Structure formats: C-alpha cells, structure tokens
Image (cartoon, rainbow, N blue to C red):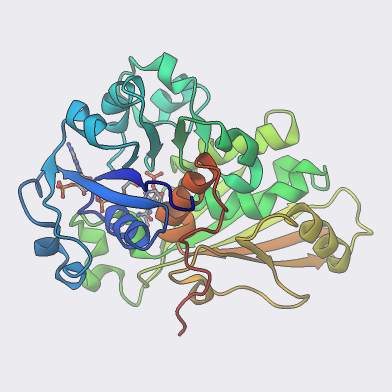
Length: 352
Ligand SMILES: NC(=O)C1=CN([C@@H]2O[C@H](COP(=O)(O)OP(=O)(O)OC[C@H]3O[C@@H](n4cnc5c(N)ncnc54)[C@H](OP(=O)(O)O)[C@@H]3O)[C@@H](O)[C@H]2O)C=CC1
Ligand SMILES: CC(=O)N[C@@H](CCC(=O)OP(=O)(O)O)C(=O)O
C-alpha cells in the first residue's frame, strides 16, 4: 500500500445488513476508498437517511444499479444482494476489469446445476461462474489470491466448515456420520420485513427450520466432498434464536480412531489453522459463545470427545454478519489485493 492510491470500491445493496457492515468496515480500511453505493428501493436517498448513525462516515447518495457506471468508477465491487441478482451484473463488471466479491449464493457452486436445483432460475453466465473461487480463506487462500471473482460463503457454511475441515481433511471421521446442529440470530435473515422475524414471533422462542432442505446443505456438502476427496452428505439443521447476531454450529461425527482424545484433536486443529489469524482453537474444556465473536471477524472453536460413543463434538461460533458475511468478504479482498489478511478488520469483539 504505502503511498499508493487507494483502491476504489463500490457496494451494491448498501442499505441491507451486509451492505451496512461493509460500509462500516471499508470506511475504516486503510487500503480502500468507498466511492459508490448502489441499491433498488433506496436509490436516490443519501446513505445517512437510512443509517443516520453513520452520517459522519459518508455523504454518498445511493445510486440505481448500472453495471457500466459502476465499472467506470470502481476497481472492486461488493455485491450484497438477494440470491439471483449478482449473476445478472457480474459478467459486465468482470468484462470491464473489476474484481467482484459476491455475498450471495450465486457464485458459491462449482456445478451450476446444483445451484439451479436449490435456488431455481436460469443462468446464462456459466463461463464467468466457472472462474469463481469459493471465498473461505482458511481453506482456499491461494486460489482467492489469484481470483477476480469470489463467491463468499453463507454464514452457516462458514461456521460449519471451519468446525469440520480438519476432521475431513485428515480423514479422522466417518464423513457420513457428520451432523450439524446450528443456531442463528435473526439478522441472518436480512433487513426485509418478515413475520417470523417480528419481536413477538422470534423473542423467547427457538425453532428449527428448513429441516432436511435448507439451501446451505448442498453448499456445505460441496466443500466437505472436496475436503474428503469423495462425495459426502451431511445432516444440517438450522435454528432461529432470539438474538440479533451470531451463529453457533455444534457438529457431531464418529471418529475412525476411538483412541483419540480431545488433547490430540486440539493439537491437530491448532496445526491445521496455524496460519489462520481469524480462527481461535479454545483450550480444553472451553466452549465458545456467540457473544465472544460479536462484531469481530473471529471464529472460536471448542473441541470435545465422548469416549462412550466415540464421537467428536466441535463447536464453532462466529458473528454471522462479520466472519459469516461482510468481514469474510473483506478478508478475501485483502488476499486478492496482496495485503495482510487482517487489514482493516476488527480483531476484538464487543462484550457483553
Ligand atoms: N445476513 C446474513 O447473515 C448473511 C447474508 N448473506 C447473503 O448476503 C446477501 C445480502 O444479505 P443481507 O444484507 O442480509 O440482505 P438485506 O435484505 O438486508 O439487503 C438486501 C439488499 O439488496 C438490495 N436489493 C434488493 N433487490 C435489489 C435490486 N433488484 N437491485 C439492487 N439492489 C437490490 C436492497 O436494496 P434496497 O433497500 O435499495 O431495495 C438491500 O440493500 C444475501 O444474498 C444473503 O443471502 C450471506 C451471509 C450471511
Ligand atoms: C436466520 C436466517 O434466516 N438465516 C438465513 C441464512 C443467511 C445466509 O447466509 O444466506 P445466503 O446463503 O442466502 O447467503 C437463512 O436461513 O436463510
């Protein structure tokens, strides 16, 4: 970086939860200048009308989306939009020389047929999609460094895969026994009004949803299969929690070697994540809380073994809006630009 010109960045979907986190992180990032904010129903409004608490951070007005105009102003574009929109604008942005980080599911799948089966819609951008890299730096750092298009992971897949990856990569579990029980705060559902997110519905209550059919299942399975070297199916059940931020994924799987104890696994996890500044393996007997990760880009992992059942239990906590979304996208940007992976990202959560 040094005295070099800041990288010009655009954020499409700035009025949403992902967008506002990107604005917060990127306004404080030493390598970039946010020059463009885009949206749909918010177009024409100053960003500070939507988020008055950030009026001292930017006087940008949200513009209607015009990929040509965005490409004329921006070196890098973050797309934080509902699924099925990024694939319409990304080909133009890439052709015009922009680097693109998509926070939706549009570029997470190596096989577009899987995307279409779970998300619907038609895709005419197969050539561009084939160049996309899955944006989980702890697993695909080298590919992200060279990418022009990154499909950033979903929030549940981030927490689940960071918990499972060392076990799968080292062949320590029977992959098909993996069960992921995950809980999310309501901000995971975005800023759109939805009945199940009303305080009267979500408060003081917990429920599973999408059981056996949540669209993050094929995303988790794609990466598990890549790590295991063969096709893997997992059982994934998400739950909505009466809290705003955070995901806790508790993963169960049967160990191949029943002699392994939690100290062995902790050593293996620490080695696997030794060059990963955003993953903390907790000391033996300590289990993560979502509150610890709140507002930081950290993923906290706790490990336990039940010697009666030969199962390993791994608990992983993240902030769904930071490591699960906007923070992870900035982490990928840092890699794409050749910067330190931690640049401009919050290391310390706010607590309590
Ligand atoms: N929330 C989370 O924890 C996570 C979300 N994601 C994914 O990130 C993406 C964004 O999520 P989130 O921030 O929660 O969503 P929000 O619903 O909070 O925001 C959606 C944004 O998309 C914009 N938008 C909608 N339609 C259009 C359009 N036709 N043209 C331009 N802009 C449009 C909206 O703009 P306007 O207000 O102007 O209409 C709004 O800014 C989604 O794909 C989501 O699945 C990924 C990981 C975690
Ligand atoms: C609590 C809640 O509703 N969470 C969202 C997941 C958010 C996310 O990561 O979704 P994308 O894969 O679309 O990016 C859900 O279950 O649909």
